[in-house]
Length: 112
Length: 115
Figure 1 (spheres, rainbow over the protein chains, first blue to last red):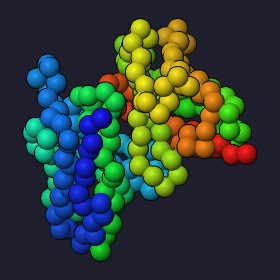
Figure 2: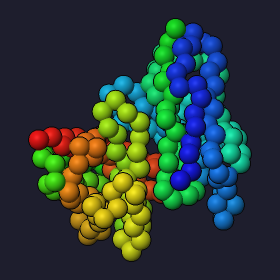
Figure 3: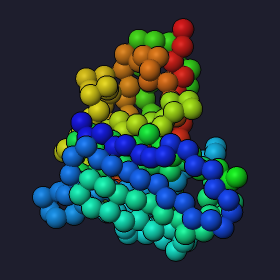
Figure 4: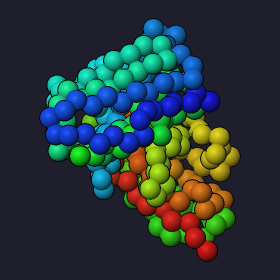
């Protein structure tokens, strides 16, 4: 199975400051069609997860542009340029290239 | 708007069965692959199963293979998860999720396995 390793596992950030989450996969995530199926999700406390990005850097509708997704191969990053209060919760990466699908452990973001 | 509404969760004893349903609306169900993802209390996300839009292709996590069956009724816009031989480690909130790339999630239904 492809292991997805996120770091850090928790992040305490001052409002208005940037934040960055790393996600590394144990195998490359380029599919035979040339796409890289790496998604990012955000789960606020008590809510269902919500997708933020698909195929590394494609931002979902309604996701603020202070969020960005980047990376290639086995190394991916989610960045928040200026953290706001609504950004708290847990962030997960997930690979959709190989079976079985696998998620990272999650990164908990809180406000300092 | 897209809506996924799960139902069928509850408290069951180990070794018993349960069937989850997910009613879809707001999109053309028959054109979308569908998935189940679960989350044990206080834990992370865990992919369970995926079914293609026609239902001809199904994929399972090793932890549920042979015990769980994913299916769909495109005439009723409904996704199912038949869970047999339930174990304590199956206790989780089960989410119905739209598309190969998990674009939309339901609110989840809680399955508690306890004697």
